[in-house]
Amino acid sequence: MPKTVPTSARRPVSPSEAKSPAPKRASDFPARRPGWMNSDELAEAVAEVASDLVDYQSMSDAELRIATKRRLKAEIDFIANDNFTKPGCGQEVFGESLELAPRQTSLGIAAIRKSGIDLPVHLSRLCEAPLLKPDQERMLFQRMNFLLQHASMHRALLNPDRPSRRRLELIDEMIRLAEWHRDRIVEANLRLVFSIVKKFVNTNNGFDELLSDGIVALIRAVEKFDFDRGFRFSTYATQVVRRNSYRTVVVNQEERQKVAGGIQDMDIDISDDERTSAISEKRWHELRSRLAVMLNDLDRREKLIIRARFSLGSHRKVRTLQSLADRLGVSKERVRQLERRAMDKLRAMAGDVKLAELEA
Image 1 (cartoon, rainbow, N blue to C red):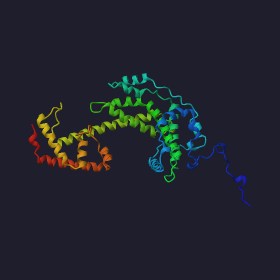
Image 2: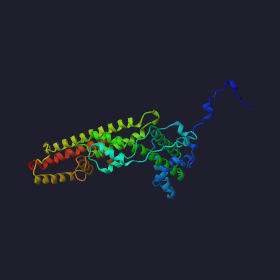
Image 3: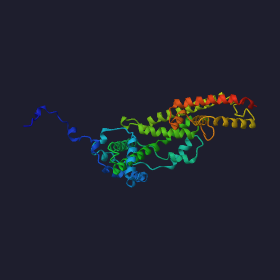
Image 4: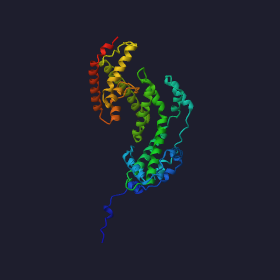
């Protein structure tokens, strides 16, 4: 006869526990489109992302396995929330009306005028989205992370040996919908980026570069912001964009100093404040010719590094050690070592060809 637990020994169950079902596990998510994705609140976003979705139905089995492995390698970053896995949460998240205001041309023009910088008119289109109300901001962050968390749950169920077209389509659509909500947050905060980066603009740091870096920093801030903490996003974003702009200015200054130091090591005079040539045009062309010959004596990696570090040839801007490390597939320190070795070779070759004879 089965043993029963006396009523007096049972733990009391609160009304909230009695009514709240247990959260779903990953294995509880079938590879079918959930009902909340048919919400009227998602209709506009669904229509906009439809053209960006991958056609998995036309893929062969081999292509499908490759696509599955690729999706498994790509991490999905989001701010997790235990409530997102509870039954009925989707209807709750998308049940409230977002009511985003339409874009306004006047807002973009006003942002350009307030910048105090002579900017192309087309940039005004970046600032046409109205500011978000606190409730709209909270809902956008909630929906973005809800979609990404559900995409991650489905991603955990992928099997390269038994790929599922329907699940891949579902993951792809959820991620695109999350990006749609992210973009609405970014658009509404671009005027904030304008107001911050313009303070760092000078003769050595152009607005375009600072703006592009600032937008990238803003996107990262959106992806890392935890809306549950109760702070407004603009407070967090201001610190992120300002810190990124300051870092850009510092890196640019360091790069200019390195370039100046490298040229001085090769005995080229750059001290003239008005940047007039210290040698005649004929001598300058001779110097460039000999420098080209010397560069050809370097190996492929050394030649690439010197040209990129000193903005020679097709390189229109100085490249950082990290960007070269990423391109060559080596460490940043290894690039530094290769640069030092190449400079030593150039100095030795400069002594051999007696570059001093080229001086005016």
